[in-house]
Length: 75
Image 1 (cartoon, rainbow, N blue to C red):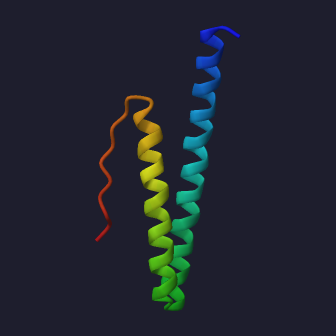
Image 2 (cartoon, rainbow, N blue to C red):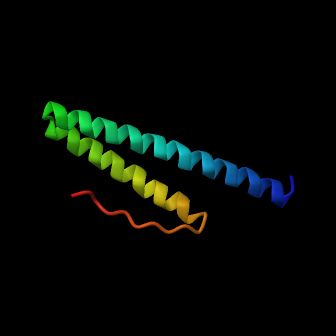
């Protein structure tokens, strides 16, 4: 397998990871909203922690594409 093919597979997998992480972040956002609506602060904290984990991983994957992002917490 040539270096170009390996690089292409790697990029493809990284793109899939970015899309998957965005889906997970979207799901966490929905769960946070539902937990807030039901008044479950414990679950809100759990989902916020999970969302932060996903955002940190997304930031690391994007850095592989030479993209730097700054994540700010919502007020």
